[in-house]
Amino acid sequence: MSYSTSQPETFAPVDRSGPARISVVVPCFNEEEVIAMSHDRLKAVLASLHQTQNLDYELIYVDDGSRDQTAAKLAAIAAGDAHVGVVMLSRNFGHQPAVTAGLDRASGDCVVIIDADLQDPPELIADMVAMWREGHDVVYGRRTDREGESAFKLGTARLFYRGLNMLSDVEIPLDVGDFRLMDRQVVDSISQMKERDRFLRGMVSWVGFRQAALPYRRAARAAGQSKYPLRKMILFALDGMLSFSLAPLRFVIMLGLAILVLAGFGIVYAILNRLLTDQWVSGWTLLFIAVMFMGGVQLMVLGMIGEYVGRIYMASKERPLYLVKRMIGLHDRG
Ligand code: UDP
Ligand code: MG
Image 1 (spheres, rainbow, N blue to C red):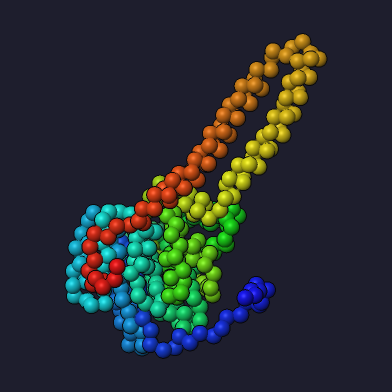
Image 2 (tube, helix red, strand yellow):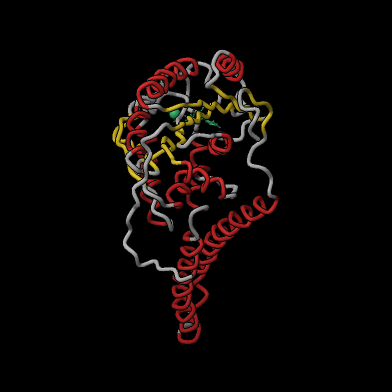
C-alpha cells in the first residue's frame, strides 16, 4: 500500500452532536480543605451539561496517597453519588502518575483533566466540550493570567517553557498546564505510550490530532498549599527536558568540542613557551585554571549522561507507574 505524507492537512468532519459521555479526572494529594468545594463546583457544571447537552458524565478522583482526610472525604462523596469513582493509590506517586491512573479508568468519549484546588475554573469545561463538539480532539487551557502565584514561580515557569521549546523536539505550547480536554482517541494514544517519565503535556503535544487552546485566567488556590515545592518543580522541569529530547547531550558534545579547540590553542602556546622562552615554569596559573575547568565540565557531562543512564535503568525494570490500593465505584474496570 502506498503512503503519502504530502497530502494537505485536512480534517474529516466528525459528528459529535449526539449523546456522549465525559469523564473528569481529578488528582488529589492532601486536598482535604478544598475537595468538598471542588466537588460541588464540578458537580454543578457536569449536571448542567448532562441536562442541556445530552452528556452523561463520570467524575474520577484519584487519591495520590494523601496523608490527611482526603481519602475519607472522597469515599464519602462517592458513597452518595453514582457518578463518582475513586481510585486510591497505595502511596504518593506524584501528580503525573496519579493523572495516568485516572486516565486508565476513564470510560468517556472525552476526558478532562483538572486540578483539585479550583485554580482551573470547572465552568470552562462547558467551553471545552463545545470546542470538542466542533471537532477539536484536544482543547488545552492556556493561562493568560495567574493570580496568587509568586513572581518567582511565574518567572521560572516562563523561562522553563521558553527553554524547553528551544531544546525539545516537539513543540509544547506555552503557558499550558494539564487542564485540558482530550478525545477518546487521544486518551487511547497516550495510554499506548508506556514511558515512565510522564510529562503529559508534552506527550499530548506529541500525539498530534487537532488541538486548540482555550485562554483563561488561572485563579489562586481556593485553599491549602501548593503541593509543588521548588524541589519537585525542578525535578518536573528535568523530566520535561530529558524525556523529550536528546538536545542536552548534543549541547554537551558541542561544549566539549569548543573546549577542545581552546585547549588546542593552549597546547600550542605551552609548547612555544617551553621552547622559545626561559620562563615556562610560571604557567602554573593557567594550568590550574585549565584543570579546574576541565574537572567541572567533566563532572557536568558525566552527570548529564548519568541522568539518561538512570532513566534507562528505571525504564528497564518496567515497574508499574502506580499501584492501586482500593477502588470505589469503578470495580468493573481493571
Ligand atoms: N497532586 C497530586 N500528587 C502530588 C502533587 C500534587 O496528585 O504529588 C495534585 C494536587 O492535589 C492538585 C494537582 O496535583 O490537584 C496540582 O497540584 P498543585 O495545585 O499543588 O500544583 P500547582 O498548581 O501549585 O502547580
Ligand atoms: Mg494548584
